Length: 87
Image (tube, rainbow, N blue to C red; front, side):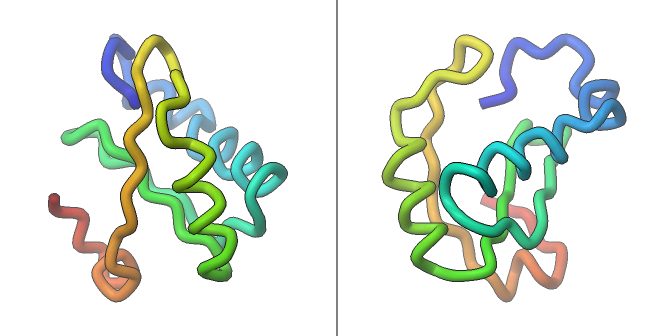
């Protein structure tokens, strides 16, 4: 989703995570936290409930952001809470 962003770290500093969280919150349900891994260019979004996460994964599939096709996946919430952001 974040490929082709020449200065991703700057985008994150300027509030990219907040923008993503707000948009997802408005469309899919309440967002608890957003983490952007600049090294792997992956975005992790934790919703407050599974229904919101399900809706987000379903509706984001195939959507294009910054010229990149989004391929959302579920991620282990325990790993997310522990700060483990591996593939």
